Image (tube, rainbow, N blue to C red; front, side):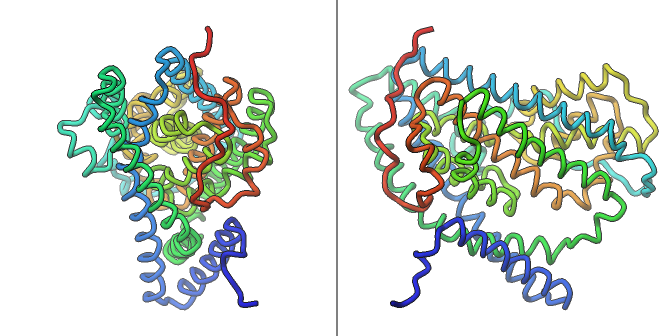
Length: 434
């Protein structure tokens, strides 16, 4: 019988792509093969571009259809509040771990760097970014720029209006349903390319950065990776067990393709279509997942907005010889829990870090000291972000009684690229009594 790639489980295909990409990356770096590095970069970039291409139409149509389908306004508000609450709870735990590791490891002590060469990043965070960034200057601009938060805002408003208009809006809603099905069908074709995209992304990372950049900042890098690992493999499993009464192994089996893609792509927004598919495969109702995952992709960042800025702020303070007191640590926690919303219209952990540094009165140039190793740190930060973005909808759905537990238990045994519909055995979303 001829060999068929389809016989290999999709998760194994991604793992093979990861291993081969690392090997090719080391080959390109050790032999200075610029053509191979360029090829890996092109392959990885094209894959992320294809994923990002699907984000605007996927987010808009899915949310419009979901808002109309929810119907029960009380239930929709309840789900939104519960989602935000768990965003805040897990972010507070994550930033506490970041602060604790910072105090334990003292990542900036003994570090010798050229402070004269440090410059403030071009993009900085501001507390007004959320208010000015959530409302687009024009609808087309939000789609052209791929601003997910603005697209979410537009979709919620238009979906709510269509819900209130009623029967007259049915042709518009039907059009969105059709577009959603078309986008999802095309998206699964792109997702099937994930093993090749993973190969290019991780191969380019290894070839371009290697590990020699980490030497002066080894302690800080280790602290970031350890902090993210604690959140990923200790905090999240405990939340699943205690809050959702769920088996963590089943969660990671279902969400792993998205977490792995987040690690190599370093983009929560680019990974978002895969994250949403994973969450639906875990048994979260599509109506809820279509709102929670896109919203989380812009505001739920335990790696970039909690662990990293906490450790980085302590690092910068120690390098510049600034003493931080209890009040400063409380400020770090506050910025991490609330500040991710303030930078939701922007991208990158550096933006979140500058917001933290400016709030504490630390030199913004301190962020420039970490730019050289930012891509290496960004891999584990984004993986943690994506895991949190999948975790919260799963836990909320479990607590609300809308999670299809049979689908959850079998998530790891079903192919993520299966274009068939998600199981229809899930409870309907309906108003839940207060």
